[in-house]
Image 1 (cartoon, rainbow, N blue to C red):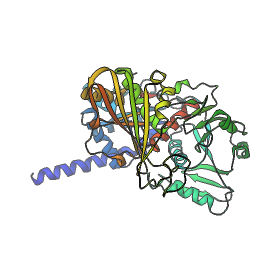
Image 2: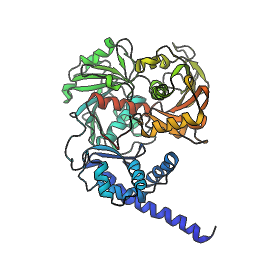
Image 3: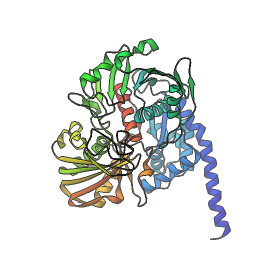
Image 4: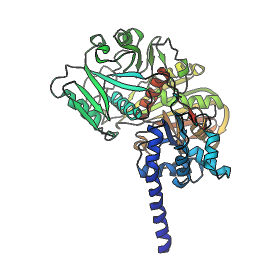
Length: 486
C-alpha cells in the first residue's frame, strides 16, 4: 500500500476523532438540559469517551451491515439540540441509518417528522411520576452496582433519588471510609465514573454530588427513614435474607417506606418480575416485588422470543455461572451441597431454581423446563445453555436472523443483545446492560432441536433490570424513539 493511502487512513481517523470531540458537549446538552438519552443501537452515548463513541459507530456495521460514521450522526445531534425536545430515549443510530436510506437531505425536516411526539416539548415531564426516594438495604455486589447506575442516571433527571444505604454494624472506626472505597474501586467493573467523598460528621457518602446517607442497622425495625428526610421510599433489599412476604414486610413497617423490591427470587405470594416480560403485572397495590434472579432474567426474554415464533415443547437449561460470595475461597463448611469446596479451584455442580422460576414470568412454559447449574472459577459473567425441543422446525440461520431482529427492533431490545463473533469470551461482556446476549456463532438448530447459548453479566446486566423495575414501580415511563416493533 502506498504511503499516500496509509496517510489517508490515518487522516480519516483523526478527522473522525475531531467530529466525536465536537459531538460530546452536544450529547451532554441533550442529556442534562433536555433529558434526552441518545444511543446507537442500544449502546449509550452518554459520558462516553471519543474512542468509545467511534467504537459504538463501528458496531452498527456489525448489526445492520450499514457503515455509519460520526459524520452521519453529527448533523442529527446538532439539529436535535435546536428542536427544544422533551424527554425521551432516542436511538440515534437507527435514525441515522433510516435517514441515509431515505435519500433525504433536510435533517431538521426529517427529525421533526420522526420525533414529532417530543419536538417543542422541553420542560414537560414526559416520563410521568414524581421524584422517588430509593434506599439500598445492603451494600454488597448488587447494592454497589445499583448505586453506580442510580448515580449515573441522576444527571438526566430520571426521578429516582438514591437517598441512603443501610449496612450492618455500628459504623465505628473506618467503616464509612471502607464502604466509600468499595464503591470507588471495583476489581471487575473498574473505577467509579466520577468523584466520591465522605462526610464523616454526618455519616454520608457524596457521589457525583448525590448525598447518600449511610445508616447502620442490624434489622429493618431499627430504622426510621423520616429522621433523615426520606419519605415514601422504595427499599431495595440486596441481602437476600428475607424472600417471602412476611420477612420483607419488615421494611414496610418502617416509617418513610412505601414499597420493597427484592434482588433475589421471591417465595410464596411475592411476584417475580422480569422487566420486559411481565413488568406490567405490577399494580399500584403491589408493595412487595421480586426482581427474580440474574439467570431467570437472562433466559426468559430469549425463551419468550423463541416460544412466540417456534413454540417450545420442552427443554433443559444449564447455567455455567461465575462463583459468588456465597461460596468459600477455600474448602470449608457450607450448608449447601458442594458449595463448601473452594470456588476459585473447582467447577461446582449445584442447583438452580431458574428453570422453575421461568413459569412465574411465562406461565405458558410451566412444567416444560428442567435446569441445573455449574459454578466455575470466574468472578463475573455467566452463560445459560438452552437445549430446546421446538414445535416448528427451523435452521440455524433462520433462528439467528430472528433473534438478531428481536435484539435490534422488538420491545425486548433492552433485554436481548446479540453477538456474531468467533472470538468473544466471557470478559467481553463485563458491563453489558442487557439481561442476556445471544451468541450467534454457537447456535445449533437441526429441525425441531435447538441449542442456544446466552451470555449474561450476572452483576451489571441484572442490576440494570432491577433499575428498570424501580422506574416502573415509581411510574417513571420513558418514551423510546424511534418506536420499537411490538
